[in-house]
Amino acid sequence: MRSRTVQVTAGLVTADTWAPFGQLPTDENDPTESTVLSFAWADPHVNYIGHTFDEVEHTENGTLCTLLNRHDTATQTLMPMTMDALVVVAPAHLDFSSEEDVSLLQAFVVRQYQCINLAVGTWHWGPYPTAPGSLRLFNIQGRRYAEDNKTAYLERDLGILVEAVIPQ
Image 1 (cartoon, rainbow, N blue to C red):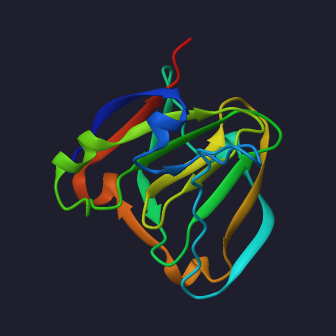
Image 2: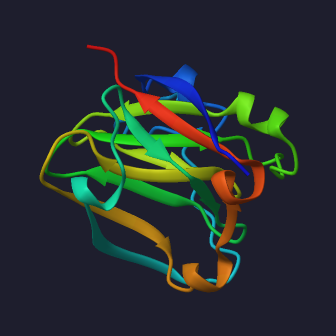
């Protein structure tokens, strides 16, 4: 099967744009605070994880996303510590059994020190660095995330490469 490329332009993360995928933590006494942490297996874990620019393939216009992951037993909270990051997400209700699901993918630039919380089941790829170098991420997720990791193989199963483009 020959792959075709679908381009997705990355937007900025705001409370409204991120709402279909989770929440953005707010300041301590903010009356709109609604961030939900959930660990069905009672296994919350905090650590640092990392990705490098060279882990993923880049084109002249953007970065290629070939798969998405999801976790059905826990939320995941991430904050880029060393640079801006690129994340591709999709709503939890999708199963990626058809090409139509790809049309609901969205890409975002997560600014350095901006914190995002992925709702349970949110499909995601990344976050990956937006520029050459190493990205260090503060990470809160279920300790047993590897046992709770579903993958949607966009290129292998649907013949689709997603090119996430960051506007200049």
